[in-house]
Image (cartoon, rainbow, N blue to C red):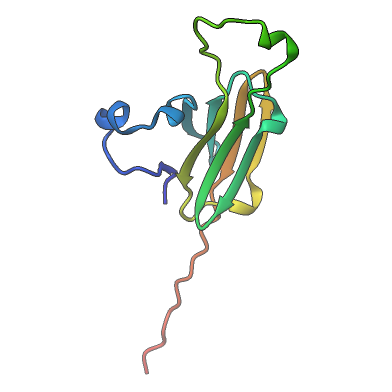
Amino acid sequence: MDLMPRRFFDDMFDDFLTSRKEQNMKCDIYEKDGNYHIEMDIPGFNKEDISVETKDGYLTITADKKQEQTEEDKDKNYIRRERVYGKYERSFYLGDLDEDHIDASFENGMLNITVPKKEVVDTKKVIEIK
C-alpha cells in the first residue's frame, strides 16, 4: 500500500480541510531506491521537541514547543507574535511498509524520514491435482 496522508480527499481541498497546525508542517513525499522519503520543514524547533512514532499502521510526527517567558519578555508590549509555539501533529498511513526499519534525522529545521518498502514475499502455493 502507498504512503498517503490520513485524509482521503483530493489535493484540491487540502487548503480548505487542512488544520492550521498541519499547515505549519509542510512536507514533500517522494519515492526513490525502493524507499519512501518524507522531507518536512519544522523551523524553530529543536530535535528534542520532535517525536516520530508508528502505531496501528500510521506514522505520526509530533512537534511540541513550549512558549517560555523570561524576565526580559515581561517588559515587552508585543504588537504581533508570529513565531510558532504549541503542539503540532501530522500522520500518514503506512500500510504494508517496513515499520521496523524507518530512519529519521533532523538538521537545520528539516526532518528527513526514510520508510523502506517491505520485500514482497511470494506466498503462491501450487496445489497438486490428483
